[in-house]
Length: 229
Ligand SMILES: [Zn+2]
Ligand SMILES: [Zn+2]
Image 1 (cartoon, rainbow, N blue to C red):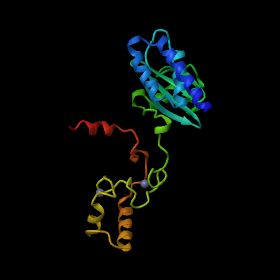
Image 2 (tube, helix red, strand yellow; image 1 turned 60 degrees about the vertical axis):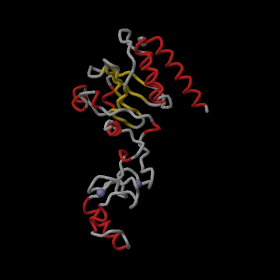
Image 3 (cartoon, protein in one colour; image 1 turned 180 degrees about the vertical axis):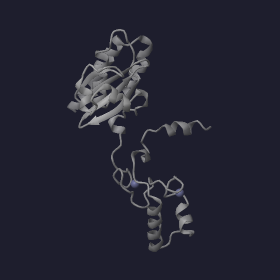
Image 4 (cartoon, rainbow, N blue to C red; image 1 turned 30 degrees about the horizontal axis):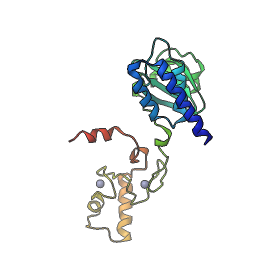
């Protein structure tokens, strides 16, 4: 309860900063973006820090948060506006502006914390902020296990789990016909066939659970699919 109130207050505060700091044209976009992350403490801390320390000449809306690395509960993140990129450190308690992306950081120890002795080494690994994956709000993030059979990330599903991906056709293993084809039968009838199937599966290389198989995992594929008609 207390947490919700705190969050609400933070959201109101950020809305106020947006109304003062962001150009009129970009305000609707900034508010929408805020809505998307309104239940994520870390993103809210980031937005407050961003909108309160906005360089006066850049009255831009934040339009993307990029996840770079995480160490314990500290995140290294990239913040993007239409024209600029910034580097931040954040936890769900506070956020710290590190510097403009690609420029010498103001917080010199920030990169060292993640094992990069200097900016050059960091940029070798992350030359473009655009290429870093998007930071996903907490409630959408990978739960760490299959939502159906509870296999943890990297482990095999329980045989028959509908989330398992077929290694032969890359379809849904519980629905494609590969198991019959591989066994040369019309239907699975006994324990022996099941064991044989498991053996063939292992030989081919079973696909262990990973977050992208999760139906709620946001992917570009969904958008592509929608364009067919
Ligand atoms: Zn599963
Ligand atoms: Zn298949």
